[in-house]
Image 1 (cartoon, rainbow, N blue to C red):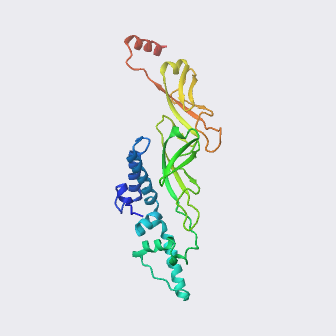
Image 2 (image 1 turned 30 degrees about the vertical axis):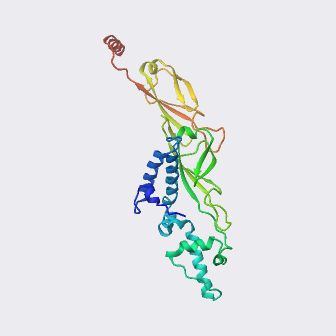
Image 3 (image 1 turned 45 degrees about the horizontal axis):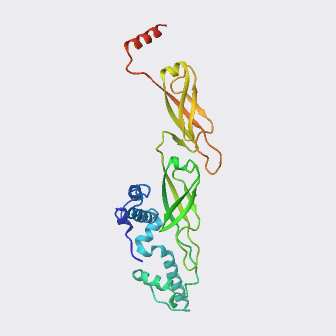
Length: 294
């Protein structure tokens, strides 16, 4: 297995902080994301490398193993356990095994997992595969409805269902889609953290949405009808006469889906902002003066 320099892939030094790694990953992920580079095989390859590097370096335990064991970091725990078992066997006098130093652990793993006779003392133990961690970048409108999406993790395509109402920063587990088990052990799990960007005029608080709507002075004073956009289409609102600036109304059930509660939605809260007319003619100004005297 060829050594891959994850620090070089993300463009950071080995002393980079967790924040530096996170910033570098997000910047590169946006640059090489398949949605922004359709049919670009090189961008797709780079995107896979970036995600793989982030899976390792963003996890403090994985990073520590990687720094110590390089390309064999996934087998760090097995190597330590094997060394301990070797030491125990040696102390009891039942068996004598070669002492493995940290400098030749790669050869040790080749013998351990390659089917040679030297691995038989350890081959009976099954080890669970490594857990994978990945970020999935979506827009707010993408999680308004439940949908399926294909992800590429460790060069494998995985079809997952993304529930409506998932929140920014939320992590879900996809069982048995992590690293392969060792010696017939179970696969690890895949943990996906959602990074949701809001490019809409709505502000979200869990399942409730908030929206500021401009209305003109005449509608605010005399009342009338206006049309507003919601995530579920256009809605007609009746503005009451003498509506004050900052007035709030609630549209029940017009908010965001409630996570994993099919058919349930939060509310949409609309705040009116009254716009004062500009560039009035002299005749219009005179009408306001007359109105003020009344």
